[in-house]
Image (cartoon, rainbow, N blue to C red; front, side, top):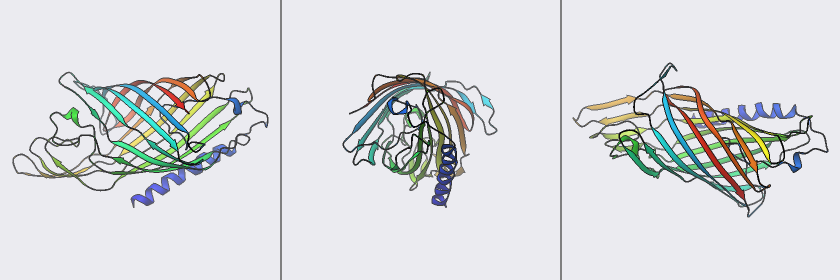
Length: 323
């Protein structure tokens, strides 16, 4: 059932964006060929265009939780809100002109008024395949499909404090479809659009001992069955000049709650189903491109609504380079 759901969602995303792309019209002699891009902040990028090409994009992100959304979506303030600084380091390598390997190692420092921790998060790796190139005359998008795995290298159980829980403990299959369209406008300010959908499917239950990322307490012994998760979004870039670009993302994330079963410190049975969660975020940003291969993007991601998840603001900056 998970695979059926995944394919259905990706098919809906693809058909919707292709319909939009067909509606675009571009003059044959346009400025799109000379335009430079870096972003956006949130939407993924297609497979690289040349074998042997390397692309790197280190991010520095400061995130401050500003409260929480309850089961009904009502926002509430909470004490000791969590803050964190992340170093995300995107690496891509072109295996062929259409097939790309990608990895995203992430390091985090997390703290509140009571404690602080530093560590690594789970490591996503994937292969991307671009089926076709975008058509700048019609706006018809390129299509990139990705499949990968999130490797559970972050700490998730036997924690000293809850902030230590930077990982999930689960090998998680990731399936993604990305469409990118670049087209001219009547006033010669090229626009690039990206639309994507991704499904994350945990492959097995996770054994748990003590304090964990799943909210279990000291003395707990048992397991968690993580739920299906996913995200989808739309990203756009509006070119002011060849170097300056205004970028924007709209992203929706969701996760089914995990099922927790085991015994607590007193030996009593625990059998709970966590609530599902969802959150909508936006990320306005500005790009400055030094060349077609090097660019800088800075902006802020923030939540605008949600359910059973924290609210946040996250200013960030990234340098993108390919060679």
